[in-house]
Length: 113
Image (cartoon, rainbow, N blue to C red; front, top):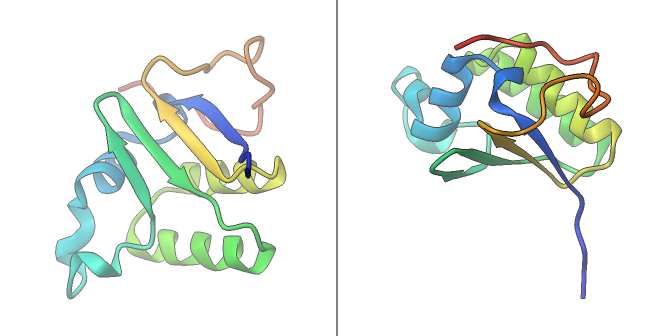
């Protein structure tokens, strides 16, 4: 059996455009196909599970690709945060923790949307 680490955070740590891109492949029209989408995420009704590569080079390449694709620097910070804490996934949830007293995430941005 393998147990993997998942960090649950609020969707407010990323922009609404990031969530639209993650959940609905909004940015797919900018590239030749939706397969060019650099972020692997599993959608659910209230957010998404975002995959974090386990090798540092993989994370840095993913961040570079995501920024080039149109994701925000806030999203890049989220990916770095997940990698720093050795998470396999970040669970973005609309009811996930956002306040610093709930979770130590001062290095993440907060967006109201």
